[in-house]
Amino acid sequence: MKVYSFVFTISALVCFMGFSCKTSTDRTDYKGLYDPIKDVGQYRLPALGKTPQYCFDLKISQSDKQVALKEYLLGSSISGLTARALKEGKTNTGIWIVNDRDNGVAYQAERESLKKKKLSFL
Image (cartoon, rainbow, N blue to C red; front, side, top):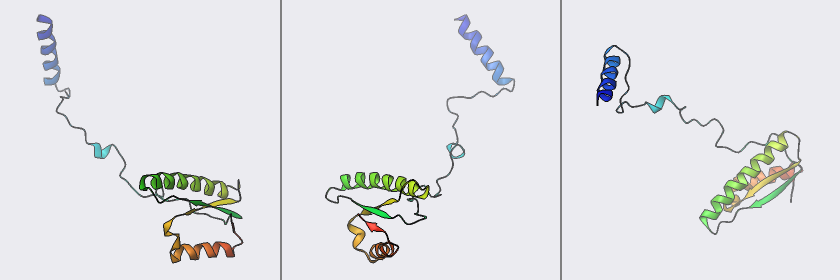
Protein backbone atom coordinates (compact mmCIF):
# COMPACT_ATOMS: atom_id res chain seq x y z
CA MET A 1 0.00 0.00 0.00
CA LYS A 2 2.86 2.37 0.78
CA VAL A 3 4.36 1.81 -2.68
CA TYR A 4 1.12 2.85 -4.43
CA SER A 5 0.74 6.00 -2.35
CA PHE A 6 4.40 6.84 -2.99
CA VAL A 7 3.95 6.48 -6.78
CA PHE A 8 0.77 8.56 -6.66
CA THR A 9 2.50 11.28 -4.64
CA ILE A 10 5.46 11.43 -7.04
CA SER A 11 3.10 11.54 -10.06
CA ALA A 12 1.09 14.35 -8.50
CA LEU A 13 4.24 16.35 -7.71
CA VAL A 14 5.53 15.98 -11.29
CA CYS A 15 2.20 17.20 -12.67
CA PHE A 16 1.99 20.15 -10.29
CA MET A 17 5.57 21.22 -10.99
CA GLY A 18 4.67 22.19 -14.53
CA PHE A 19 5.39 19.05 -16.47
CA SER A 20 2.64 18.07 -18.86
CA CYS A 21 0.57 15.13 -17.78
CA LYS A 22 -1.61 13.51 -20.40
CA THR A 23 -4.75 11.90 -19.17
CA SER A 24 -6.90 9.36 -20.96
CA THR A 25 -9.37 12.14 -21.80
CA ASP A 26 -6.85 14.04 -23.96
CA ARG A 27 -7.92 14.06 -27.60
CA THR A 28 -5.70 14.01 -30.69
CA ASP A 29 -6.60 16.34 -33.53
CA TYR A 30 -6.51 14.00 -36.52
CA LYS A 31 -7.11 16.80 -39.02
CA GLY A 32 -3.50 17.86 -38.64
CA LEU A 33 -2.10 14.34 -38.98
CA TYR A 34 -3.29 13.56 -42.52
CA ASP A 35 -3.19 15.42 -45.81
CA PRO A 36 -6.58 16.52 -47.12
CA ILE A 37 -8.02 14.46 -49.96
CA LYS A 38 -7.13 16.03 -53.31
CA ASP A 39 -7.53 14.90 -56.88
CA VAL A 40 -3.97 15.05 -58.20
CA GLY A 41 -4.39 12.46 -60.91
CA GLN A 42 -4.59 9.33 -58.80
CA TYR A 43 -8.24 8.79 -59.75
CA ARG A 44 -7.72 8.84 -63.52
CA LEU A 45 -6.16 6.42 -65.98
CA PRO A 46 -2.86 7.59 -67.46
CA ALA A 47 -3.35 9.43 -70.73
CA LEU A 48 -1.80 7.95 -73.83
CA GLY A 49 0.91 10.30 -74.98
CA LYS A 50 1.41 8.39 -78.19
CA THR A 51 -0.85 6.20 -80.29
CA PRO A 52 -0.19 2.46 -80.09
CA GLN A 53 0.16 0.42 -83.26
CA TYR A 54 -2.28 -2.24 -82.00
CA CYS A 55 -5.06 -2.24 -79.45
CA PHE A 56 -6.82 -5.14 -77.75
CA ASP A 57 -10.52 -4.89 -76.92
CA LEU A 58 -11.07 -5.87 -73.29
CA LYS A 59 -14.74 -6.82 -72.80
CA ILE A 60 -16.26 -6.16 -69.37
CA SER A 61 -19.16 -8.39 -68.35
CA GLN A 62 -22.28 -6.44 -67.39
CA SER A 63 -24.46 -9.34 -66.24
CA ASP A 64 -23.54 -9.25 -62.54
CA LYS A 65 -22.77 -5.83 -61.03
CA GLN A 66 -20.21 -7.15 -58.50
CA VAL A 67 -18.39 -9.14 -61.16
CA ALA A 68 -18.52 -6.15 -63.51
CA LEU A 69 -16.94 -3.89 -60.88
CA LYS A 70 -14.14 -6.38 -60.19
CA GLU A 71 -13.48 -6.85 -63.91
CA TYR A 72 -13.52 -3.08 -64.51
CA LEU A 73 -11.02 -2.42 -61.70
CA LEU A 74 -8.74 -5.19 -62.93
CA GLY A 75 -9.09 -4.00 -66.54
CA SER A 76 -8.33 -0.42 -65.51
CA SER A 77 -5.16 -1.56 -63.75
CA ILE A 78 -4.03 -3.56 -66.78
CA SER A 79 -4.88 -0.66 -69.09
CA GLY A 80 -2.94 1.79 -66.93
CA LEU A 81 0.13 -0.44 -66.78
CA THR A 82 -0.05 -0.95 -70.54
CA ALA A 83 -0.31 2.83 -71.06
CA ARG A 84 2.77 3.33 -68.89
CA ALA A 85 4.70 0.66 -70.83
CA LEU A 86 3.63 2.29 -74.11
CA LYS A 87 4.81 5.68 -72.87
CA GLU A 88 8.18 4.20 -71.89
CA GLY A 89 8.56 2.50 -75.29
CA LYS A 90 8.34 -1.05 -73.91
CA THR A 91 5.33 -2.06 -76.04
CA ASN A 92 3.40 -0.96 -79.10
CA THR A 93 0.04 -2.40 -77.98
CA GLY A 94 -2.69 -0.68 -75.99
CA ILE A 95 -5.95 -1.78 -74.38
CA TRP A 96 -9.46 -0.45 -75.12
CA ILE A 97 -11.97 -1.28 -72.38
CA VAL A 98 -15.28 -2.22 -74.02
CA ASN A 99 -18.46 -1.77 -72.01
CA ASP A 100 -22.13 -0.82 -72.47
CA ARG A 101 -21.32 2.89 -72.81
CA ASP A 102 -19.24 2.34 -75.95
CA ASN A 103 -22.31 2.93 -78.09
CA GLY A 104 -22.10 6.63 -77.27
CA VAL A 105 -21.06 9.21 -79.84
CA ALA A 106 -17.89 10.22 -77.97
CA TYR A 107 -16.59 6.65 -77.76
CA GLN A 108 -17.31 5.99 -81.42
CA ALA A 109 -15.62 9.25 -82.45
CA GLU A 110 -12.54 8.44 -80.38
CA ARG A 111 -12.35 4.94 -81.81
CA GLU A 112 -12.62 6.28 -85.37
CA SER A 113 -9.91 8.89 -84.72
CA LEU A 114 -7.59 6.14 -83.50
CA LYS A 115 -8.27 4.11 -86.64
CA LYS A 116 -7.33 7.15 -88.74
CA LYS A 117 -4.01 7.23 -86.90
CA LYS A 118 -3.33 3.71 -88.28
CA LEU A 119 -4.22 1.90 -85.05
CA SER A 120 -5.40 -1.69 -85.59
CA PHE A 121 -7.95 -3.09 -83.15
CA LEU A 122 -7.37 -6.78 -82.38
